[in-house]
Length: 348
Ligand code: SAH
Image (cartoon, rainbow, N blue to C red):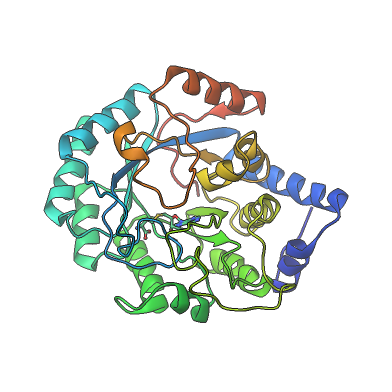
């Protein structure tokens, strides 16, 4: 069995090129996954409820500064229809994600959460950015179960470069994770792999941070360049020696997923859409075989989907088409895994 005790161990794996040795990493992650969270693959229905955003994240296509993008916010009725669809598909969870949109009013969303919890057996996950403590508390009281907020990078200098100051910077994001934990949410976080300016040391630090935060959920995917952003256009850069720059490849993403599994054995870890985007043929399966145990099929109404363009050419499992749905089940079963039943929360 592989021991990942400190940063040096993590760094060695991140730099490993030998495919026979990497097989050992994949096998270890798969075994730790099986022993801790079992063979079920939990499906979380993703509802992208709004693409309005007040932030200026340098990598993200729905940033406020992207004036070329038509904006939408789903109605309560549309969101509830998606939640009912999730029930028909036998998912255990819906994830409501959006830009940081204060047009999503606190009480309005609380009402939707209450209705979903009253009407359905679903777990409710929110991913709405750095909202004030009061909002997070109101939504928890309304019945929300989990919250996803990636810290994006543990390197404060890189963080500040790619997130123009808004409400307190890097420390604020970590503080929000703390608030979420104290409110009783299951807490998810994560990073992008291969952000320009991300070094091996940074990524190793990110993985150590997963462990330090004892995350319930960890989302990692490759950084995908979006031309309508300052990072994508090259306007903002932090130059690092080429040998130090982490590449935004599939392989680096699998390494990060596998190491995340080893440092947080019980976490729920999705095989992300960004990973499926850079390898549409079998990225999702390889993620599941190398530590992941969750997939997030997209339930957003088709008319909005193209507008939630955080990066270009986003892959999606289009669960509104029956064909895609059958195919997803077949793919999971072909890995010798089963489709999860129930909410699939953090096991302890
Ligand atoms: N507003 C919410 C949701 C953001 S979108 C929040 O701030 O948490 C969800 C995730 O998509 C982000 O946390 C980020 O890690 C990822 N993402 C954004 N732009 C991306 C890009 N260009 N490539 C890959 N992932 C990206």
